[in-house]
Image 1: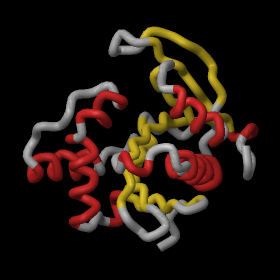
Image 2 (image 1 turned 45 degrees about the horizontal axis):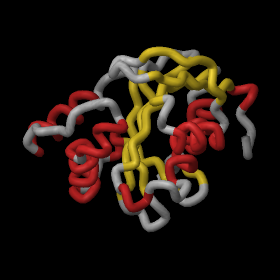
Image 3 (image 1 turned 135 degrees about the horizontal axis):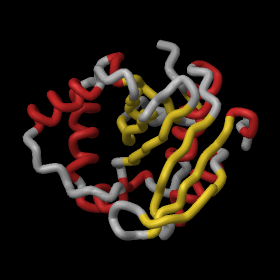
Length: 175
């Protein structure tokens, strides 16, 4: 069980198999209206069995790696993905589904674990992301994890987005 870790969090690959509690946590993450709004989507209305089938099909894609974010007790907190994966770069996506854990540094720690994995294990040169410009909490967390802002622009939801990236040469143990 040599999964990516940083601080209090562990990234459990979906390919390792999710427990029933982790599946339910993942399902509830995507059903929550507030989480969906911050993700630029609508709350999930799909039945659990169909959601599970869809996620299992997505796990077979070669251009993405998905992880359950587990806290220091091994309990589900959210999900993190590296997608649009190439030999050179990936895009990062993260959702902390347990809202009572927001603002406690778990997201930053999960991103640090993912970046170390992306650079040290996968050998990527760059990881990028896009988030809402008005989401100052997320922007600060990404910056604390090592990302820097590289541009602003209109996003698909009609809101201004900020584009961020971190390059391998700029990523250190405590960026």
